[in-house]
Length: 200
Image 1 (cartoon, helix red, strand yellow):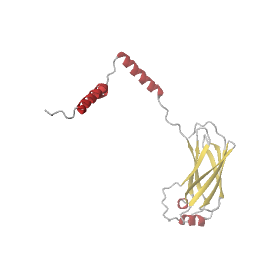
Image 2 (cartoon, rainbow, N blue to C red; image 1 turned 90 degrees about the vertical axis):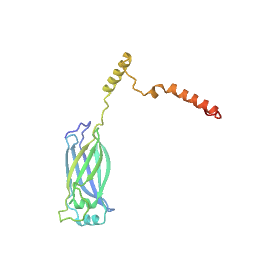
Image 3 (cartoon, rainbow, N blue to C red; image 1 turned 180 degrees about the vertical axis):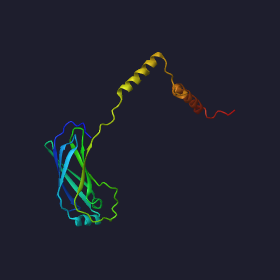
Image 4 (cartoon, rainbow, N blue to C red; image 1 turned 120 degrees about the vertical axis):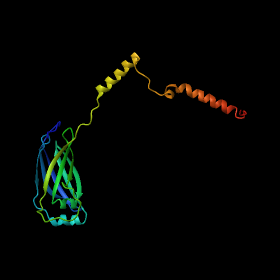
């Protein structure tokens, strides 16, 4: 899917990651050749210690991914996290989404796992290599008000009023409240000023 972005410069996203409170380590990088055309490729480090991921999953720790984006001469860092057990049970299969605004600027990087996992702890042995899908999410235009239809409706109502074709659909009280309220007040005041009058 091609996006209508104002600018389309290439960029590099440096990835580093950590489990729980451990120190960040390099994970690789994403090379973005064109945001408009969605041309990206990812290079990742090949060796990871599966025991660390298993322990982090058992201890209910989080997996943290830090993305340092170099784009249009500006460097920004984004941090995203998910439960380590979700990464472990997906067998290191994840989805990294690059969020882009209408001007073509990267304003976020997020991480998700592709399956509906529940951290059950049942994981077969697997090769400890990341299998990553990179997606680009484009910001969409909001709804645009239909000003022409509104102006046309107002003009039609104006013409109908000038011709006298419009009917007043208000209720009796809504039309004549200014006459009813003074009458009610007069009756109330006259009744209050003569409370000892004999009843007939």
